[in-house]
Image 1 (tube, one colour):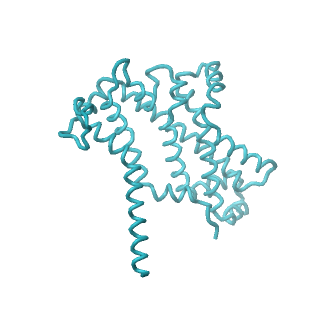
Image 2 (cartoon, helix red, strand yellow):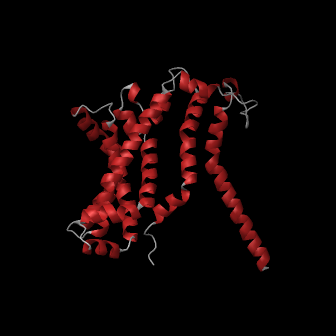
Image 3 (cartoon, one colour):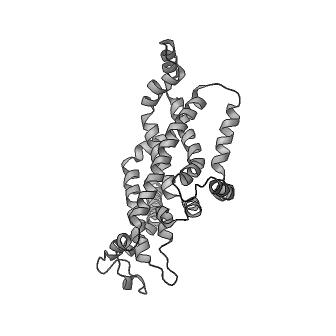
Length: 278
């Protein structure tokens, strides 16, 4: 009886897991096969679940008929600089939050948490006016600074958890040996928190890479558009090139999936750091 009950629970569990994976992966599968179908086959009814022959013309059109390479370069520059700035400023703030005692610490943490919860649409208008008056619209700076408003809280929260995991005795030993707080942070904490910095960098990069609303609003010049906005602009007045849109989406998504799969253990350990204390 127990064996039968255990077998039923196991069957239901794995059925639920397989169903969940199919539901989650189906949109990406459909995007992939759409990118490999010919234009005639894309609009065929009923739709084919697998292309009759692989058609790579959509991938060629993406790079020859649109400035997609320029969109990729813009996204890479903005995401990379945003990640570097967040790690530089966020790591020092996270160290202060994790190690130092000062007045207003709880208020600062609450403020960081509340800022991270703001919907982007709530700050869109004031940010647009500020950037317009500073003549930063359609510039890299005009996108990097707004991105830091939502990636900096993520950086501080994850890195502060990592810093709390490092024994305080190492700080005290360094200070006894004559190091200042800044030297302790630079020589002791940063080398030990390498996995945390790496994890945070990946998450910040992906968040900046996928952002759409700010990039759509602040980048009015076509040459300065990022990948998500560039793909949205593929739509013509009387046409909707699903093949090109799907091919561009695959080109953008596959490197991120490979990155996450390679470093998934570090990402999970980064997100769960500080969740359990021994």
